[in-house]
Image (tube, rainbow over the protein chains, first blue to last red):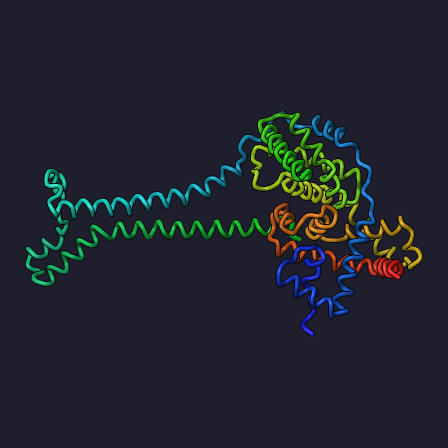
Length: 202
Length: 200
């Protein structure tokens, strides 16, 4: 005979089981006297609990009138909790918005740069080039001073360009991603704590 | 078709009443109180076993509901929302009125061994014994038991009302019933005997 199904008997008794689990329990109960007896004791317990009569309360209308007399004049407009809840959603959404803006700006910038290279934006190429320096001051200075030359100078220029142009953007995006992940982790932890029902923990 | 139509009309009316009450309409709120007064008082009475405390705590429940109604969201049914407030109100009141629970426990320990099988047939004594056994449960398990046994709520509805996972509902209910079965062994024995005698 398969193992007893005691842990499922409450759910079975309450009509909460469906599908395979329900068939499994029914099949087991047909064969197992012990589980059948346990189910009977659950049914008897329910019978006992329902044997307690409910008291005679005042009529709902009279009760409502009593409540009405005690109602405060003002309702809470928007609770502090609700504002906090909105903040919890708005901050990560804001971070995502900043991230999307940066990525879109980069993509647009690349498109304009490529279009300019193909001569599609000849009319405004001067404007695009205005103020655009290659940003390799340190490497150039080192090259002019004779400290770097050939491949070394080329690598230094590439590294300096990367550091000046790309690294801040990558750092910013990584920071935003980390912030978002941390925020999500805190939100999840908070949500799990609420799910456990702190007011009713025994 | 009739019950479906009536249920739909009631649901729509309740939604309208909630919206009006959220805008400060007291008469709409009074109608909501009339609809849910019995259920809320029953839940609290089963939680604390005292009709007067149940009346007081139910009034507190509806006052709190009125105060916080603007922040009520329609995803949760009003009944579940009210029951959650009611359970918390009952728990708070029981903690304040500590005299009820300790006495009940004391009486249960004193009386249970003295009750012979014959005495259990006396309705009043049996009712008192069962009531005290329920009151001796931890508040968290008691709340789940009350909502399931007396209000007939599904596990999902209880989980929604108490804001706990369904798994927790199941474990608290298992614990409550196991504890009650242990405490009410004699009564259960008589109940099973009566049932079997009836079947024969």
